[in-house]
Length: 356
Image (cartoon, rainbow, N blue to C red; front, side, top):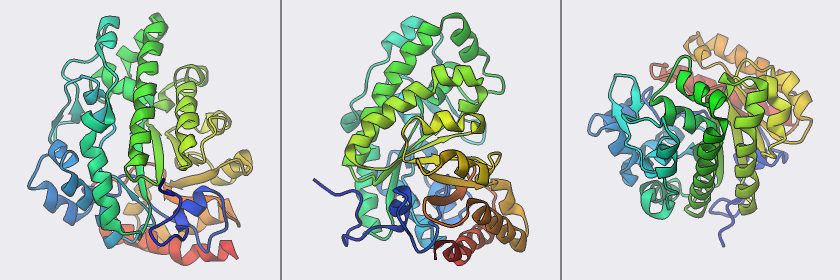
């Protein structure tokens, strides 16, 4: 069985050591959506194919996954894909309207019967293209940095499936949740089983860590978050951790539920920029590593201001292991590449002082 905690040379990666809260020489850095439109090299690939074709062509997905490692110098790669491939594999039609609001489900879920028609996909057949992309990417990386796999959290996937697309008020999923909660729990249960199978297949195919994205966890009240999101994330974490691979949980706008998120047992807790890093470390108290948390908008600032923000976050976390530097959410498409490079370089230059 492959030791996914080790690189190809048998030595520990900086990122994986930080996930396990082991001593490191400096703070590792990567960022969400790091393979994307801010890079001219990515846009060159995208000019030839549509988004879903890029996701479903392993060689192209691997190419754009590796780009930030080579161009920006990040300490981990995250496989290029989309969280909505799971609902598609469960039987929903997924379309991406280029420059018109992104991914959509033309026939969103609105009945219990529609939920029951969803099937539990076999990732080795219906999501084979993602697994092949992981294999190709691991070969391309050749041990330079670890490879992260990912999935959306059940609640976040459910919101897209019921709303049909992104939403401002989440009227349909919340109305259904409040009036027929058993239906939503049925959907979340089916999604949880699918996510567990998918993440385990990713790990078997080469992912050396996995991240669960609960992008819409923050639209729920604390009580509703405890009922409709956390238990399902905890089930996924518990099952996937049997592989020995670190599990990262990132819930956007969920700083008020940090204690509960720690309770899922995740190895790493991702926080956004609205959560104070110093307070987060006190709350986590060594039970998990912390990932975050620069505001993505900061990357539009002058480079000296970016460096100052990096320095502040390092100071707020303080000395010692268990910090993975990241943005508080995904990088924005028109972010200047030179600013991104300056951000990564600042982390590498300033963080060794916190690990002596």
